Amino acid sequence: MGAVRGRGGHDSALDVWFDAWRSVPRAAQPVLRELVIRGPQSRTALARRLGLSPGSLTRLAKPLVETGLVVERGVAHDPVHGRPTRPLEVVAEGLHFLGFKITSDAVYGVLTDLRARVVAQRSTPLMDFSPATVIAQIGELADALVVAGGRPPVAAGLALGGDGHAPTPVGESELLDSGLLGWEQVPLRRLASERLGISCVLENDVTALAHLRWFGDAGDTPDFALLSIGDGIGYALTIHGRPVRITEADIGLFGHQRLAQDGPLCPAGHRGCAVSYITTRAVVMAAAQGLGRFPAYEEVLDLAATGDPVCSQAVRQAAWALGVLIATISATTMVKTVTLAGESAGIADAAREDLESGITARRGSPEGITITVMRHDFHEWARGAAVVAIRDHVSAL
Image 1 (cartoon, rainbow, N blue to C red):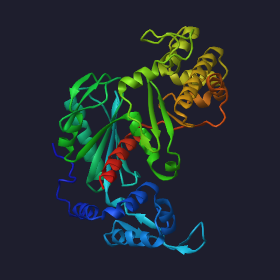
Image 2: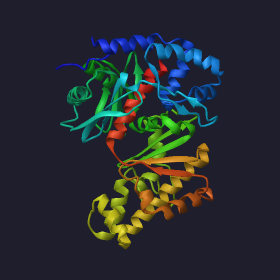
Image 3: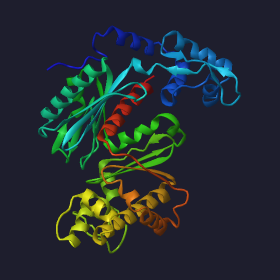
Image 4: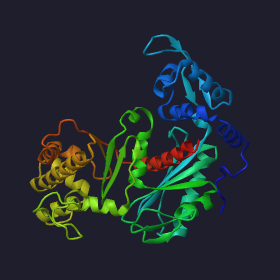
C-alpha cells in the first residue's frame, strides 16, 4: 500500500513552501499567525491587533511578502480611516492538511488548505473495528483526497470519540483505549503517521470540532462551550482562546451529573442525570413508553412537530434538561456562548421555550446566554481534526 507524500516526500513545490515557513523570522511569526487565523487584513488592522507601530508592522511583513507566504491584495479602503490600503493575505492554498473523523459506522475525511477551507471530502463505511482495517481505510481515503486536491498534505488530524480514555503519552506515541471501537492500548497516532507518511495529531472529536472557532471573527469570542448530543454527551470548553483539557473520564462524569431528583434512569442506573434525558436513546425511550413501540429519533421529532402528545412530551422534557445543563455550564464557568452539535442538537430548536425554561430553573434567566446549533455533518468534525493539525503546525513557528 502506498503512502501519502508529505513532509518526507519529494514534492518540489511543497519543499519550497517548507523552506519559506522555516525562514520566517521569529519577530514576524505573530504576523503570519494572525493572517492565518483571521484572514486578509490591512496593515493598520494588523498593527492594532498586535500592538505594533505601522512602521514595525511594515518591516515585519516585508520578508513574508518576499518569500511568497503573504501577498498584497487589490486596493481597498481602510474601514477606520477610509484611506486606500492593500490588505495582506496569507497564501493558504500553498499547504494542505488532512482531517479524519472516526465513528462506529464510517470514516469521514477532508483535505483543507491552511485556512481550513475544504478542498476535497470523502467518506467510507467502516468494514470492521480492527486497528489494521481502520488504518487501511484511513490510508485509502487519504490517497483519494490527495488525488482530488492535487497537492500532498503537510500533516493530518484524527478525531475519535466514544467512551474510551483520552490518549496517554507513552514515549513518542500514544496508546489509545476506545470503548467505541473495542480498542485497548492501540498506538493510533503512530500507525496513522506510518501509513500516511506525515505527522499526525490525535484529539477527542468534540474538542476537535471546537477548534473550528479558531478562525475568523469567532476568535473575538475566546470563551465558549460546545455540547455534542447524540448517542452520548460530549463537552468541550475554551477559555481565553485555549481549549481546557478534559479527559474522557471527566466527560463521563459530566454526562451523568444529576439534573433532577425524580428523573428517568439512565443505562448506568443514575436517576435524573443528563444522559437519562438528552441522548438520542433517552428521547426514543421516553416516546416508546407512550407509543408502545420503538420509533426512530427523527420520527419522534416529526410527530412532536405535528402535535403528538407523547412525542411532544419526550421532546419538551429533553429540551428542558438541556437548558438545565447549559445553565449549569454557564453558572460554573461564566461562559455565555454555547454551541450545540451532534445528531440530536436539533432538540434545542424543536422546543426552544422549554430549553429556556430549563435555563431559568437553574440560572434564573436565559438572558445573556447565546446558543447556536450547528448543522450536523461529520465532515465538519473531520474539518475540526484538520484544524487541530493546522494549529499544531502554526504553533510550531
